[in-house]
Image 1 (cartoon, protein in one colour):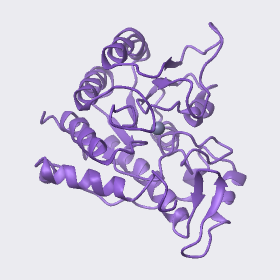
Image 2: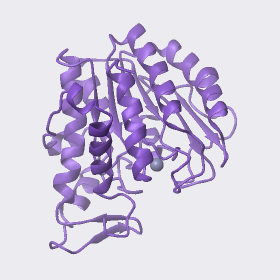
Image 3: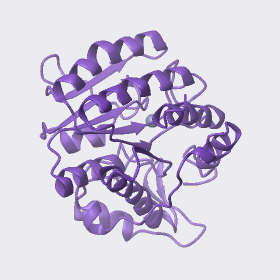
Image 4: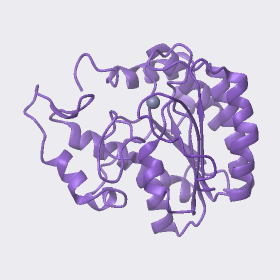
Length: 297
Ligand SMILES: [Zn+2]
């Protein structure tokens, strides 16, 4: 999105580097991401939202701003379709039993993209599209979306706020972009357990939220599949926000989710990269997350 932009190609390079350095790259099965079709995008997004990306690609080297921090370049349409296509292909592979679970190292991220608008570095909502795909193609009736990105997943909440088949659990720093997700007490639907936390929240508080808010809701919902909006920008080294998680916290959270998936979902988890902009911390945190998913921690 421009040399100045934190959502940069170096993020995936940092993840690859840490997978190799940690010695786990060779223990994982790697697959290329296919392109999602327009019909796939339509599982969540309006025709206008799709056309706004597809029809505004600039010439190579130029940028087209959708908002002040969400820009298109000449490759954005294909990149966004590969991101969504990865989430769908991962869902298919997990549902077919080809793999136990999957992590999608994808960009652009997705959880801010609403049905009608790209925003916040996100063009299409990869996790929401894959969740709809899982319900439509495989007839799943209970899905959980776990969002541990430091920002509120407003696009995901918008998509599923009227669909109690989808339980969404998250925490998010508030106030912080996109300044959504805080509802008057008692007005939040039971299937939206999105917990605001102030700046400088530490890991012990986040773990209490997981134990006291997420896990009871997850056990009550008994999800047949878990999707993770895996943003790593709540890491204490990430300057885009001010929450104090470290790699061990991402491993701990992942362990809780693996256990829920084991109980109700035949272990089925599809995790998709969202944010995470401190490159070293991002790579190390993904390694911690993947070691647990792969059962090698
Ligand atoms: Zn984020």
